[in-house]
Amino acid sequence: MLLLYNLGLRVYYVLILFFSIFNKKAALWISGRRHVKYAPFKQCIWFHFASLGEFEQGRPVLEQIKTNHPQSKIVITFFSPSGYEIRKNTPLADAVYYLPLDTAKNAREFIAAINPTLAIFTKYEYWYHYFNELHNQQVPLFIISGIFRPKQVFFKWYGGLHRKMLNFVSHFFVQDEQSKQLLQSININNVTISGDTRFDRVWANAQNPKPLPEIAQFKNNQKTFIAGSTWPADEELIATLVTQYPDWKFIIAPHEISEEKINTLINLLPENSATRFSQISNLTSQILIIDNIGMLSSLYQYGDIAFIGGGFGAGIHNTLEAAAFGLPVIFGPNYDRFKEAKDLIAIGAGFSIGEEVSLRKAVSALANDTVFYDDASNKAKDYVADNIGATKAIINHININ
Image (tube, rainbow, N blue to C red; front, side, top):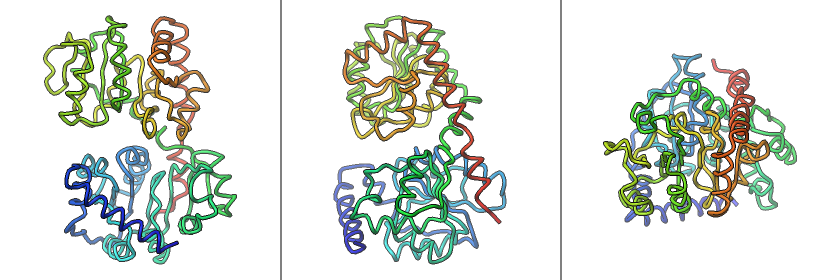
């Protein structure tokens, strides 16, 4: 199985190399890993994140460790360009790198260079050679905000190598009881149900959000529909709402902000109805398109209803950022892998839609029934508030000298 794992990684690398010829993200993935000199540390704490979402998820633990142990060096690695390129200059770290491809040689050399005293991986990312090398070097490895599902390879008859990876982990901090039971079913008992650190992150953000004066001026005290991390399938549906709610403002923050993608979105919308944030001059426009990265978590403070993108593709993006501000959240049908989405639906604060008719029905109920809206809003905010505390549970368990 290890032979197949190593072969699969090399095939993956060749594919990325091929796509890098015409795909910007693939090109960054390749170039960011070439000719890198790793700053040597006598010791450090190593945080690894798959991408930007996992960085924000693990950030409360990172910030608390940095506060409690200001003398400790912090090294951050990312697998994806969407995390590295945005957070490569974060003041929370002494060094930020792309994670080298998971080979035995790379794992030995990288870990020897940064010399971690402990490693913390957030939610996803299980790499055999890195986990094995940390285990061989007796470096404690923690998984935080972990979540497991029965369909994952760890719980299949052919998942022996992946189960071996799990045995290299010193302790798992998981989001729910199901994850704990699944791990125990394969004889892994070093598990604590701590919850999801994203709740701590989004709650802290909602208590002290960054003011955005241009957004406040654009909103102008009007009801505002905010669509975050949208994809084309989401945007086609959202475009149908604009003429139905002429007294509402719409803010759309696409997941991809290339010139081509932004222009395609503008062409979906009623003529002359949209303004780009980078060119904001007409504050009386009905629609504002956010053509930058990094504003979304603060945008929601100006909203009344949120639409979370991705639900017609691989899966929805972060619903909790909006819910923390008391926004009822609407999203597409592909949310099964997201516990918080299921929870929000169950309590009446989240609404899954599949086409234009169901979207209009959900928005109409929230926009026209004050009692219904207030109930959904309060439940969304209370849900986030009731689930904070994962960071404290993790910090209390991890021993840092």
